Length: 351
Image (cartoon, rainbow, N blue to C red; front, side, top):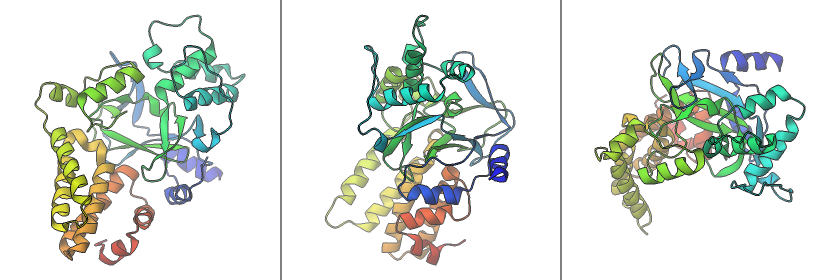
């Protein structure tokens, strides 16, 4: 176990197949893993956004930036019957409140750890400073601003909520260059395109394909800022059409797939359009969405008995998967099995 921890903390070499296999079993996992941060990524102050994480050397698409064990995680199943105490002005949900209480208990007596957590952003509570506020109130504000959702396997529905302090150092951009996913209580961040030395590493706190007004409203109400990334500026100026195109094709896909008899030719064409729309650089953090379109295209190509087209989409699905989840032996095959397509991929895969 000690040797495995060294591999994890120094090289980011996790047993991803074991982690994903256990996670697919449906348990609320807390894995015996340790955290990792890429040695070529450093945290430093930004001119206008507090702390941020930057590449000190060039990073490659798919490269692991952070693998972090949760400071504290709370699964939905653990909420049942739990007493929750909130301050009169508390505006968060029950999960946030209970996560804050558990975190406060966990770090009781660790003044240094408490100071470190209280140094994190408090979102909408950042100003004016609550100089006389009790530490438990400040910590609850930190949790409300920085917690992330823990998902069921393969970007499934929410399974819980947790706090990952290192991951929280990455600032938001709707056109983010990194993506994230959780496996149990582990939080993984990967580059989604090649990143130059000196470039800031960013995550999207919200789906970049939803409307500009919706994104800004959510970001302002929860995090206390208005996004000024390149995508937002283009959409505000009315020059970015990709989002509108993607929304339109998704509506067409839904209408097509809801028919009693689906036309596989039409369905394949629409999935192709959706996939290609997300090829735009500003949507590089949405390779998980591309993966879904590629898997749907595989299904339709197989239905049409178009073997060459099927192989092309299988390769596209694998590439999108590996950018988001990593290229680790057996993990993509596990995903294909979970999607009921293992035999198909085994039979037709070019690899």
